[in-house]
Image 1 (cartoon, rainbow, N blue to C red):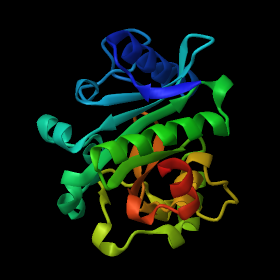
Image 2: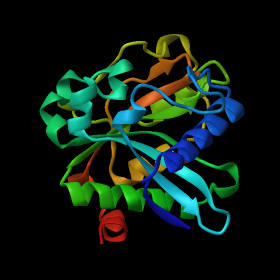
Image 3: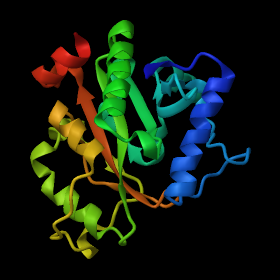
Length: 233
């Protein structure tokens, strides 16, 4: 298993096919794509694509999409600005990287694959001198949003200071949902929070993916010491 940035169009295409397989075929997302079986949008040409590859199988088995600050300026926005008003993070933009479209092939959903992806992200941040990671962490809406609302209620101890709060453009209707279910925090979100990330406000509803998306901000200065030793050397 290896991790690194995709270097060729064919390797990027592999990552986009994996994304389609996970998001559309497995999770039922409605993807607006020009090419069958490929997840591609207007942000892809501006992004770098971190991939985990099984060298023996010759296949991309995990991926993150990375949008650097200068590239966000070129396209005019971060992807997450379609879901949230990021005005309060304006001052962080020159040092803020957005990650998204994270997915792993079902046969490789182990701690090892996630560790490789996070190691690749940490290396990218250090090599380029960036200080903040942002992204939308998704929760299933299969039950209409009740589990997502219940998870969010349990995460109040992880909320960012008010000066870092962002605001959903299409809010999850929390007041009309049951927020008392014993719902489990998704493993990826749990990992972010254990590492030191903040939740930056109420979740948004993404109708295309049918998910409730949490705005996540990770200042590298807050990275838990155990994670820092492991990922940052």
